[in-house]
Length: 492
Image (cartoon, rainbow, N blue to C red; front, side, top):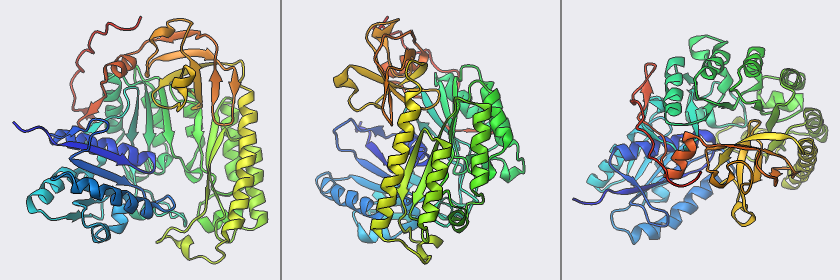
């Protein structure tokens, strides 16, 4: 019997792409492939691409260039390209990189195994791009990356027409899943020990638009919060235009929903927001921030900001700085505007010189770093509950630390030695500790742990087990009661 073909999926871009890659892994494993061991060349390499970031095209073709000699030295190896850039470039990918075997788009993720088989049988590249969603991704199998935290897609696509964004053209119009299907997938994950889920949507709080229920997202948060064993619920990314007070109420009233909110600003200038077609103005945005803080004083609010949008004046930019000062964001993802082919903004007059955009960008990041530092200093001496994470601290090993996320989403590096049950701390466990020092982008807790709770997720992490879902639909998970986890002899 020949050995199973191996695969590796490389992911670029947003959380939606990360979750799509879990589906791709699940599909390949269902088709008989196995994950390639670290350091080994895979028989199939899948590049799940993003078209949003600057120089995405150059990055893709650079990576494909690096793969060519690997493929030449590995007879039978296949290379597949999917995601947003594949949806955009289509056959151009095979023209520029003829050693690619398969190109598939954002709407036909489920076709990958068949396309690989066809390309191998025909000894010819297969390019299949469809214009609308064939199967909702969550009806496909998934091999999850994490034993303790899971992505759950509640919608795909977007009905907005932001002039800087190409996503609606590549992901299509919004399609919403039914609440029963979403809750069944959450339950399936919790049954396997997952403690935290993040609800995903291109415009997550517009959920329900397809079946005309404006209160659907708040109702979904409350319903998910009633699932026993689910300790943390997050969601990303909402849009200020559709953000309603019932969502704030659901966040405040549902214990499992974390007091963390990512609310993209993009610009503080009403004139720039109009040209961006964002559908809200500065007053509305700041009003949302004020109401969130009134309901949840401990909420950590983060944002996205674009600097140097076409026609942005110094006065416009100062308005952005003023909103940042008033909002006191915990952190911000800041971007220098760059043209995206196919977007209205790419054709607008008033494209700014690079040096002007760079200078404004540096002023913005300096201001936000100072605010983040000031806000983090207020947390010194405060007790925090952390869900222990894997791979979040690049220097943890040399400093004798582990890392975890607080309920507000902040990253905390902590000492695992000493304290209650500390010797057996694993990713997926829950610990309590006290913040001792801070930096703009993380917190440190170097004292003894106050508590340590071992969890099923921690057991699974230690055993190398990851949740798998074969796809859920019609409100019922298609997995049975999970097998008991193996008895572990290590740890306390």
